[in-house]
Length: 171
Image 1 (cartoon, rainbow, N blue to C red):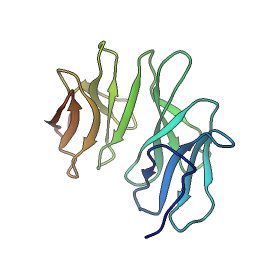
Image 2: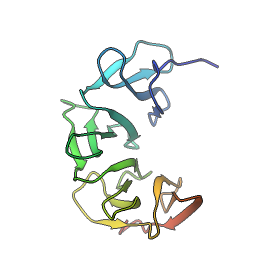
Image 3: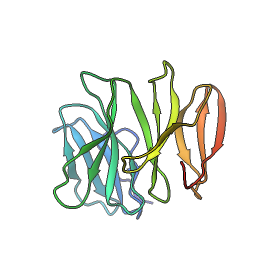
Image 4: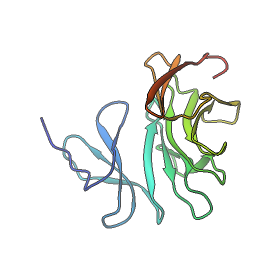
């Protein structure tokens, strides 16, 4: 058992290979960091004046999906490639609050929560996009989590835990 400090980082996210944790840190330079579980020093992934929370890794570890607050919206979903120049780009950027993004186990779909309908609902869209998008929940929903098979999506709706079947070809 080893303690891995994230310097107060909120809700760290495990890399697919289990060797690193990504987390947001406001101590020093604000941004997203990741740290090896062997105790090595943390590495900066993204410097940001805004709050940027890591949400999910692509299954192959090639990218990190994160939510970043913006003055024009409450939260947008971004993709940070972890290879090459590491230039982030938006996946879901609207005037509404989007958050809780999770990449499917096969790496083809992104589930997330959005308030665009006037209440939080769960959506699925092609990953990394562009492509189809559809609303999964019908009576409110948040905090989506994929089943290991990627054929079901679990989410919260008020005090209930819901599950929706997701067809691999259409999301």
